[in-house]
Amino acid sequence: MGEKGLQAVIFDLDGTLLDSMHVWEQVDQRFLRENRILPPAGISDRLKTMGIREAAAFFISEFALDMTPEQVIARIENLAAEEYRLRIPLKPGVLEVLDGLDARHIPYCIATATYDSLVEAALERLGIRHRFRFVLTCSQVGSTKAKPDIYLECARRLGHAPREILVAEDALHAIETANSAGFFTFGVYEPTAAADWQRIREISGGWGMELTELLQYFI
Image 1: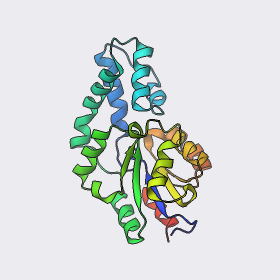
Image 2 (image 1 turned 30 degrees about the horizontal axis):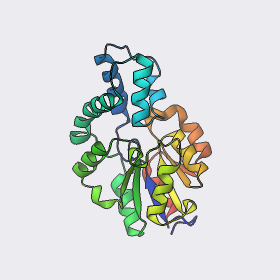
Image 3 (image 1 turned 90 degrees about the vertical axis):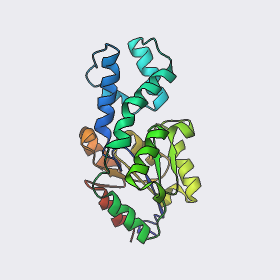
Image 4 (image 1 turned 45 degrees about the vertical axis):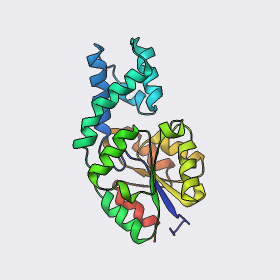
């Protein structure tokens, strides 16, 4: 048990466990360019709070694309697939953190907005899929991280109350959501979200430039 009564961990995936946030910025821009659209300034910031279907609907309405949401989703997934299957690495300290939690008998899972197939491809390639109790995606829950549904479902499956669970996230909007549902939040530094770092430090229960710093909450 952690010093604050913490008994489990929910990890975000992209930007927390995987060094992958830059990939999504590139994919969004490639998708727009292949549809002969010059990516507007700040487009990545607008998209990062959206779920898969919300982003697809945004692309269609904002840029008058003659595509269905399913076609947009499939194309973006295809653009990202090679990176997840072959190249995206773990962020520094991930294996050390998982080993530390295992040694303390702390269960952990993943809550992510990423496509199911990409999640499985990356985790299997990196050899860590079996270490997580389960992986839950926003598409499985039916809502984005703007709502606490995915965190609450993780808590239910882990068998602990929100106040007993540390949520590790790199995104400000996700930390705000987890806070609102009563979880203990740990902000993880991510270079692509550097503009939000001061605010993340202000509102998180704890924070770290490295993921390994969360182990201090589990004695």
